Length: 295
Length: 256
Image: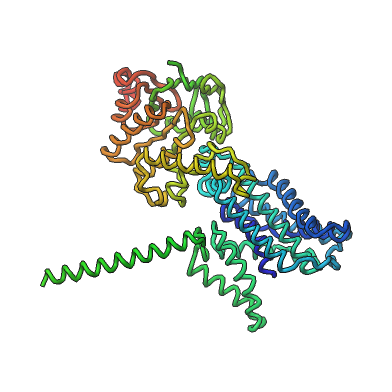
């Protein structure tokens, strides 16, 4: 279940980092905004869970829009630092805001998150993202990532597309936060610290930048891994770290870097292999022929 | 024929340095004009000023009778001007086809919602974009390379792809920044024919920065010579060839 929730946040971050090329270390902040907004809707306002999720996504998107207006003009690393500051600021505000439980946390949120609504939202999330990426909007984001100046000269409003990527990705994080709140039934600012943001970024990079299937795979594997490693007890996080390092050395572009797992790509892959095999066979036959002539 | 682009009193200062000062020239509609001058004369700066990459210090740029001074770079493409870069700037990790397809975006009007749920409008317009990209690639002779990654193309073809991408935006004025840089005489010859061809086929005007004198003299109908940010001369190739100031700037004059 946690994999599924993480996946939604990871999908959003994948759009921002993998496709639009912007690194964020403040996505836990958007999750926090989503979680608290959704909790306010369902617990205090007694609204249905679906409304809570929508509100969580919408408030996170709104917050990201404000942040984007202020910081998206910043280049590369500076934007990254701004998001880091934002994430921590949100956590500290919630820490000190007693009305919502403050640092002690907020218990008693209804346990509305089920495996089914996670699965449904996962599927919708993947489908919408895949559609977005393979449209002119998605292509424009990729163009911004690849070569900002050329994108601009090609008539792409760089600021607008960075903003679009940021807002959509924050909405995903907000939805993930809402689900998390109603799964744990308890939220605490500490859950949304920088460690959480970093974890999301690691998953995206681990899965491969610019690949949705990579992000899905990364989210499932890396959320499960620490659980599987419970056997090695207190060494588990060390093993987890080593596993991540090992894979990054073996596949520097991430598990699926730039490659998508779709029926079409699989077919192409196997066709290529068949071709390569045929070519090799032909080569061997030719060599044999030459050998005969030589003798 | 009227002028499609007019530059009046164009000046750009970086601190105390005047990279371009008081430059006037114009490009005729349907013409091919050349911008030449020694290194550091301010040629690329002028391109950057026209396309809004730099802010103009003084002067005005007029395109088709409208003032476009200091327009945001991304709006310049909508207005009808596109350019290539001296150091090629492709979307390196994308395929040749995707490079062109991305640039075609302006020809589609579907919105974000259409993208997310793949409405019939999305499918229809997306098909138009794909057909257009393929057509452009065939015209420019890149169709058989369409699935290659841009970065892996030979240098000459990368240049060609950059021009194709610029054409995908349906420009009426094409700015080429040293398109023949790094090309051998054979490739230069081909490129020259290509530029003339493009002008006729797409009915556009061209302004080209180039160091290959041979190419400039044969291709351009009108040449502007710059030196140290100032205009030295302006005229037909023959007039330029005989201009004393120009010869002096290029070959160095004797002390007087």
